[in-house]
Length: 257
Figure (cartoon, rainbow, N blue to C red):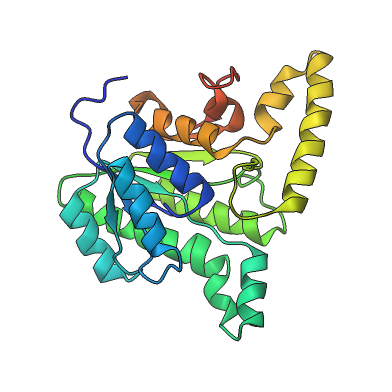
């Protein structure tokens, strides 16, 4: 793929496990990168130092529609990565600390902030510079069932598809690794158990299942997200873990329009 003429890449959710890896991958490829960090982040100073050391620009615009629109108008990104998400644990922690748990809910973060970002991106399109919107969704978002998390992802996917922007939707399975700063022991335990089971199936000839359903670390996912963003032939597709792994760990390409 050619990297010539690629406008800056905007990374929303840059402070997260996947976001940090995406910033690092973009800079490894020599792409101009804007890492968005919440101005009230408790790790703001450390994040600014780390991203600046990589050669990225740090933007600390608040999560307010007008401020976000102004920031995107200022930077004019060619690719916008929407890597936002929360967990039930964060909502529970907010409640324990006397803060509003709804501010950390799926509706507020996974849906609300992502749709705010999508709206700001659509305004760039109206100005004649439509960015490619890369949305980090999840395995199962096409059949969400009763899961609030998957329902939130499905709702955003529908809005991304209807936005009129070129887009990529990524649906990996578990995103985890020993390098994750936020301790999630149960997540690691179940991911390892699942991966071992999939390894056994792969040994019996079901390697495709492992490629689609095994966990992946942030660096592997980041490489797949960036590769898809820069490949126009993948725009308008929902890509599974097998595709995202391809070229990194030898998975089979796959996806759906």
